Length: 355
Image: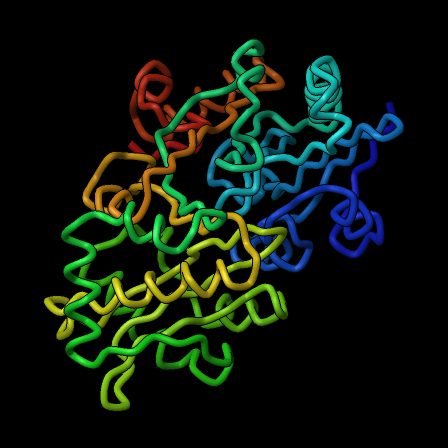
C-alpha cells in the first residue's frame, strides 16, 4: 500500500475527492479554515492500493498549543468541526480486509510521527455502514442523527412530518413568513446577528461560537455553501447556512430572532430547504442530532421532520500508550487531581480534560 501525507495545497487532495463520494467537510478549503480557527495544522492521509483508497482529513495539534507537558515532543489529531470521518472508494468498501490494513498503517504512521492520539468524528451517512470498526475496538457510538430522504415523493416527505411540525409550518405561511435562498455574502451580516442571538439565548458552549473570519472564510467553499433566510415584511427573522456536496445537503448553522420564537419561522426555513434540496436532485438533507449526540430537545425537534436515522460514532485512538500515560499524569498534576479521575471523566484525550 502507498501512504501519503498531504497538505491542503497538494493537487492530490482534490484529485482524490473526485474519485470518492465526499462531503464539504472533506474540502481542502474547509479543513484549512478549521485549522486557522483552532490554530492547528491541516493534513490528510491518503492510503492507496490500486482502486482501493482510504482518505482521512484531520487537524494536527502540536504540543506547544497545549498548556501541559511542554518538555515532551508530541502531537495529537482531531477532526474538523462537523462530520468528516474518513472516506473509502467503492472498491475499498467492497474489500473488508482493506480497512483493517489501512487502520493499521494509519496507527503505525501516527506512532512514528509522535502523534499520541486521534479523535475522529465519523460521517453518519458515508461511514454509517462501517460496523467493522467495532472489531478493532476503536468505535464508540455517540447517538443518532436525523436526515430527510429526498428520494421520496414530496407527499411522503410531508407525510413523515410530525403533526405539530405540520401545524407550525402552516401557521408560518398564514402569518406571511417566506423562506428563500439568498446570496451568501450579501445577507451574511443579518444572519450573524441571528446566530449570535440564538447561541446567547441557548447559553451554548464556546465551541458553537465562531468569529467573523470563520463565516467570511466559508465563502471560499463557493457554490457548495448556501444561505437560506425567512423573512416577513422585509424583516429577516431566521436563517440557516447549508453545505451541499455529492447529493448530501448539511444543515450547518442556523437560528431565529428571539422576538419571533413563538411563531417558529425556522420551521418554514427547513420546510423550504428540504424541497429546494430535493428539486436540485440531492439524496439527503442531513439535520444532525442533539448536542453531543444526546436525545435532547434539539434531537426531538429534528426527529419531527423524518423517520430516517443514522448511527453517529467517533473513533478514539491511542497510538502511544506510554506517552499517553505521561501526558495524563502531567495534566493531573496541573489540575491537582488524579490520573484516574481524568481517565474516568469520559473526555478524550484525557490529558486535555479540564475537570
